[in-house]
Image (cartoon, rainbow, N blue to C red; front, side):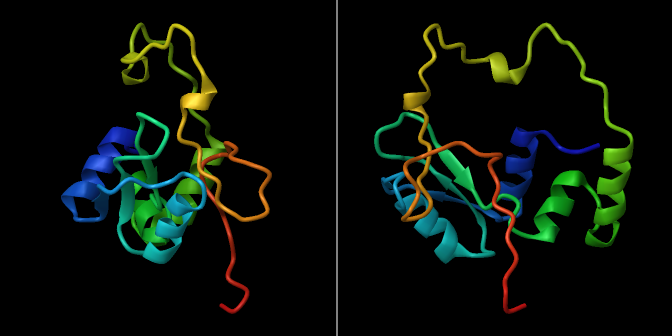
Length: 139
């Protein structure tokens, strides 16, 4: 069974693989610069993002080892685990309450989210699946 988001963050933190960035960062290019410069180092949790009350976390899945950790398997088992999950999707479960419902916004405003702008030629901040999958052309 895969870990929940909070459990995964706790696991990373317990292993020294999650580092808090306490200084204020701008979501326009600065968050992405920190993530890029950190590379395959620890995941980063930005505690103070300019213009928002919310934190940002990144580089959670920047290696096969981290993905395997979240799926509670070894790197060697990773492909098999993903293929098996795709072949046997879990049915959604209806519950009365969940951690995602701890904070309820009466008038939700996407403008309050600290959405990063990653690259110079983007027209502005936008939400994606939350990951960037890329291949290094040299390796």
